[in-house]
Amino acid sequence: MTTRRPMAEDLAWVLEPLLELPGVQHALIATGDGLLEGSSPGLDRAAAERVAAMTATLHASARAFTTAFTEVESPRLAQTVVESEQGFAIVVPAGQNTSLAVFAAPDTQLGNIAYQMQVQVAALARAMSAPAREPDAAGRP
Image 1: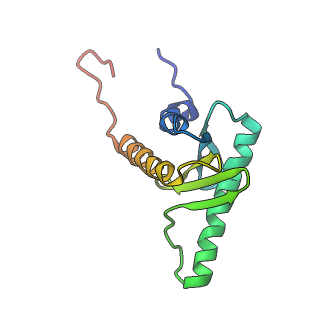
Image 2: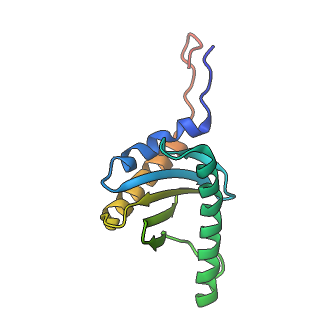
């Protein structure tokens, strides 16, 4: 009998290519209600959980901000970017009720990171929509 890995480990493959980009320091996946789904190894669990919660709050605030300007209820966000002296925090929707967040150095190529985040979101969407494997004739998955 095989043991199923927790979801956070299952989704780690989404973060690996992003963490290889120059300037990217941390990355994580969070649910829309702020629960941690996976994080980069350099981010301790407590910090990752705080960032996951803030990711949900940041996206909710960005939607409310957009609605206040446009009067469009529930606008779809492409990305939310926060720039500080320490670097960039970038959050993108990663499917239904999921977000992908990255923190990168201030001198990073922001466009390249945003593009690669979209590539990983597309890969995640394909993986999440793949049909379940059927057992073979011997009963093995």
